[in-house]
Each structure stands twice: as structure tokens, then as C-alpha cells.
Length: 241
Ligand SMILES: Cc1cc2nc3c(=O)[nH]c(=O)nc-3n(C[C@H](O)[C@H](O)[C@H](O)COP(=O)(O)OP(=O)(O)OC[C@H]3O[C@@H](n4cnc5c(N)ncnc54)[C@H](O)[C@@H]3O)c2cc1C
Image 1 (cartoon, rainbow, N blue to C red):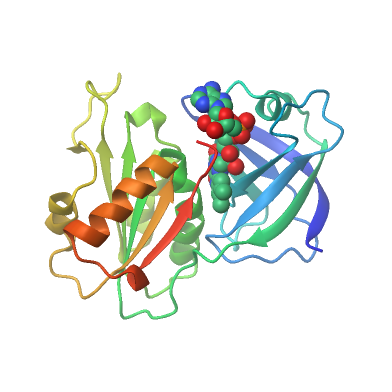
Image 2: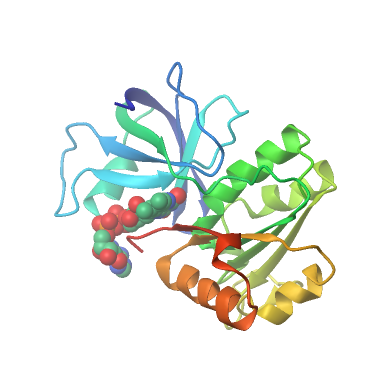
């Protein structure tokens, strides 16, 4: 059993309609950045057909003191309840699970392809890599409709200053890219975009996380347009979006 009762420490808005929830890290709770947990509301005042449990990637690094998850706030019973919980409220967590963790081979670069809230496991890995000065070379391609939809955008960019082996490429796919003027890449992540930044790196390992539609499109592109081997692709699909 990997179940723990913990408490909510706080919540904040991290992008449009997107919140992060900070949980007290239970004593003895160990995880590897990139893993996820099941979050269960205890005696929620309402539930729906999907029940009181949702799976979330751990967005905090293992080196950070607390646990954090981040989610798009839709009009579902689970999210309506969790958004109104006061600090100190008890929450059950189960985990950690999952194997989308940074490869041990430090010779090969890691290329992360994140769609929207799919940034969560990559924040955990990238913060851990920066704080622990891991030797891996990391490229993060981060796709959102508009800057205001991109959780942790500034923080993920700031990490470039902390870690010279980490590079972030953000792209906005919305027609007008939102209210904020945008100077960076636009449109979906494509083979051409990846090669513009990664043409001269030796055989990378690719990591995909985000809504199923995005992950499926990226997976197909890697396999059939770029000829990447299935063995070199690691996936965390956020089923439920
Ligand atoms: C390994 C893994 C990791 C995950 N990590 C994360 C994470 O870090 N962050 C995160 O946010 N999610 C993550 N998810 C998905 C998460 O578990 C939920 O499924 C998701 O947040 C949706 O929950 P919900 O309460 O909004 O919708 P649910 O009530 O779970 O929705 C169930 C169904 O209804 C549909 N639906 C409900 N509301 C709407 C709506 N307003 N518009 C359109 N369709 C709707 C959904 O498409 C879905 O098919 C992860 C899933 C997995 C499997």
C-alpha cells in the first residue's frame, strides 16, 4: 500500500483556468521526478460519475520540500471541491507510480515535448536537474495556445539561467497567440522545429506529456516522420482530457 493521508498547504493560479495545489509531503514519501500520484478527496461534499480520485503528475521536484500538482480547472465535481478546500484540509494520496523518468545515460540528450498541463512532470525533472546540477542535456519544447495558458512559463524560462545544459523552446498555437505579444515560435511542434534546435545532437531520448490528442500526434510524428525508434520514446498520456 502506498496510500498516505496528507494536508493541503495552499493553492494558486498558475495559468488561465489552471491551478497548482501544494500538499504536505508525507513522512517517508519518496518519488522520482516524472512520476504521478492518485489524489483522493476525503468525504467530498459532491462527486460525479468519475468519482473522487484523479491522477496527477507530481509537478514539484524531489529536492523541494512539498508535493505540488497542477491541473486545468474544469467544471467537474472533483475540481469544484478541491478548489474550495481550505489550507489544512485532509487529502489522500496514493503513489508514486509511473516510469517516465529521466534516463540514467547522461551521454544522450533528453528532448521533452510538453503540451499545456503536460508541463507538470517536466517541471519536476527540470527543477531537479537544475538544483542537483545533473549532467544531462535537456531541450524542452513547450506548446500552448497562448502565453497566458502556459503553466510555470516564466519559471521554466528562468531555469535556463540556472542550468546551462537546459534549453526551452516555447511555441504558441492559437490564432492570435492571446493577449500577450509573443516573439517566440508559433504553431505546433514539428520535425522542422525540433531540427532547428536539435539537428546536431547525438541520438536523443524523447519524452512526451500532455492531453492524449497532442501526445498521439507527437508520437506519430516521432515514429513516422522523424524515424525515431519506439525504444527512444517515453510517454505520459493525461487520459481524461
Ligand atoms: C498518468 C496521468 C497523469 C496525469 N497528470 C495530470 C496532471 O498533472 N494534471 C492534470 O490536470 N491532469 C492530469 N491527468 C488527467 C487527470 O487525471 C484528469 O483526468 C483530468 O485532469 C480531467 O479531470 P476532470 O475532473 O477535469 O474531468 P473528468 O471528470 O475526469 O472527465 C472525464 C471525462 O469527461 C470529459 N470532460 C469533463 N469535463 C469536461 C469539460 N469541461 N470539457 C470537455 N470535456 C470534459 C473529459 O474529456 C473526460 O473524457 C493525468 C492522467 C494520467 C493518466
